[in-house]
Image 1 (tube, rainbow, N blue to C red):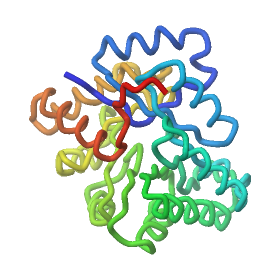
Image 2 (cartoon, rainbow, N blue to C red; image 1 turned 180 degrees about the vertical axis):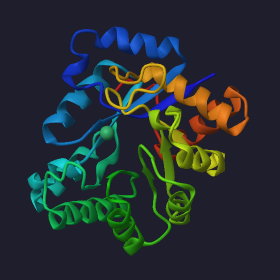
Image 3 (cartoon, helix red, strand yellow; image 1 turned 90 degrees about the vertical axis):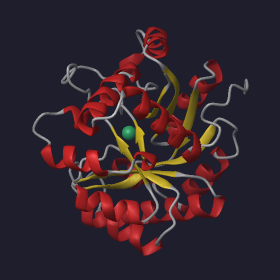
Length: 261
Ligand SMILES: [Zn+2]
């Protein structure tokens, strides 16, 4: 059985003390590959150097909505330059976050639109972050229209919202939130999303799934997400693992490349 963690931040200093152990535990839990999301320029380098050290790690480079005040046309160009590196597979994470609200909405929207447009021009997938901004995120995505080659990560919406995302041709990233007891809307969506449109993620060190909730999250816990999905969907763990791994391979070509970079 293989699992792919399509969204984690093990470049962050929360893992400085034991990063190698964390990677080993992931391998032991069946995690064959992971995508480390470099969410602003200083993180790109950190993520890329991890990928250089460890062949199961690949990278996304982008500008997080909470960092959107760093946005400029030059920055967009340097994202495009990162994409020329073989270990950098995607643009992200981008999107809109009105919970932290660290940058004005119009700045977040411009940074988001530009990164989606760049991903489309370069023919690479993109990763969307959404928090307290379901309407605003859909507005941008729907202005591009289908087919969009991307994933809405850390999905926390209901089935109605999932359908709008699926209609755009996008994938849906499911993580720790599906293990939280109170999220019945999300449970309902998670049982209805077609298996060929979902990918697994942890968002480590954030959003730890039950039974690790409230602690530091790590890629090995993607197994807890897969287990809960299997339970909710009344499918076997093997079916969930095979389906989501194939989707991750299709969405992020090269994610399982063993090639030494
Ligand atoms: Zn993230």
